[in-house]
Image (cartoon, rainbow, N blue to C red):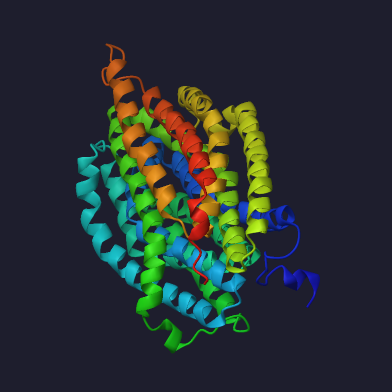
Length: 460
């Protein structure tokens, strides 16, 4: 097998220098996360430029609801990655095969649930969130189309998680790059060419995601030398389904907590008006890029820890955690500095409105230090998840997001009410996020050092 071909194969992370294995695995995934972010960013840029700031606000207001209803897939994907990495590290072909088969079946069931429930709850949720009348129809169109075509998103993310659990972060990258280019082309065609507005953006996204999902399925079908994929393995298996759900449910619940908090805070954001809503969209899009190294290294640490715990190499887990966290912090610090230095022209890509650019840059400066704190949180949480301890990160998320962030956001808004800001200063939502991230890093470090996650491995 040639050197190029080896890039697209499963990789054993139980051998070699730990930091090199982590970096080799992380680079393709980081590029992939950049491409993933372009899905949402391209949507925002194109609707902002071709339709207007209100359309930009509509896409952003739809995001918290979308995230809330996608928690099923987050749970399946996390559980899958942990089980696949540990069974692959332990060289247990049968359990690995059952795990992958159950993932495919559960994803189909979850997709049908979202396709039915999503369109039914969309408008009531938008009304509940006090979504401005000027953008509510656009928000509803965007969400309904996305939910009806959810299978592509679901299968890409879950099957890409399976590939990463096997140590192959390159294949999912290539498939995502293909889908990203297709998404941008379709965005421009549907929005600028056919004047489909926000609905065109949603349609372009689900088509592109469907293509990436099909490519993942084809890739897995070619990996029969590592696992078996047949009707027997696709049949729902109680043991593996329960294990996957037990591992994945806390991560899905964590995402649900985060999304519910975002929805509650989005209601506060909506009270500040369309300008602040649009500002929030721009900051969150740039935030997506700033967070990418953190989520990337978090996922890399999950796979690395999972494979090595499966192989009973705790010495490598300890060494990899130290070096991986240091690298994550260094990368996050560099990217944060770059965003602060070049943030203004970056914000200008989304809108031509100068006061909107100024407001967005002001909010980004508030968040800056928090990205470095999140590098620590994601890396150490990734190790704990890789070991099979998904409960601890869930509780930490519950404390920092619900018990801390929401009250802080509303408290600051209440205390800063004035004639100029009748519902409070808009900075309140961003300050609360910074406080939440910083405290999260402190609590995560404490629980990592306590070490109870070390007894959670699946492999006997």
